[in-house]
Image (cartoon, rainbow, N blue to C red; front, side):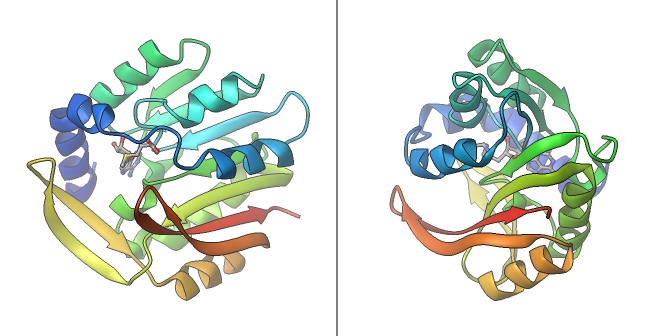
Length: 200
Ligand SMILES: C[S@@+](CC[C@H](N)C(=O)[O-])C[C@H]1O[C@@H](n2cnc3c(N)ncnc32)[C@H](O)[C@@H]1O
């Protein structure tokens, strides 16, 4: 595992309970509703950087949608397994996704891409495209201003990395996605850039 992924993994292993207890669990319900509405019946989705499984994996499984969640942090994965017993959770780095082509009907990655170095974002989007089935739906968010570096988060060092919304959009398109919608949205007092894409 590379040094950045190690730092992020160790950070979340230390702060998992604290982070999760402060999570605003309903702030992006509208976006989760939209994602769920775009999926086919009996969909299988991948939640990338799934954290404690709430809200995303719980929201989707409660609607009969199959979820596989991946995360770097064992502590977060254990919380997710307790919180959402009907989903499957696997330790994996999103920079090295080990899934076959055309596996998922939807991929969701929220509040996670900003922990991955900018130089990896395009490759992550390309891999998302590859492992989605034709017609598959992507939902991601990222920060709103270009930056990269380390700062303290819940008392531990944490790595952050974002392109501008325009560059993120360009990279999602370049990876092959058509764009369903994109916008900077305020949710729970924070601004994020949200993109819905389709492998069409
Ligand atoms: C801010 S939390 C958000 C968790 C969840 N998506 C949510 O919305 O509650 C970020 C999560 O992304 C995970 N993560 C960060 N970088 C990752 C990577 N390269 N691969 C897989 N998971 C990663 C962290 O371990 C952490 O659980």
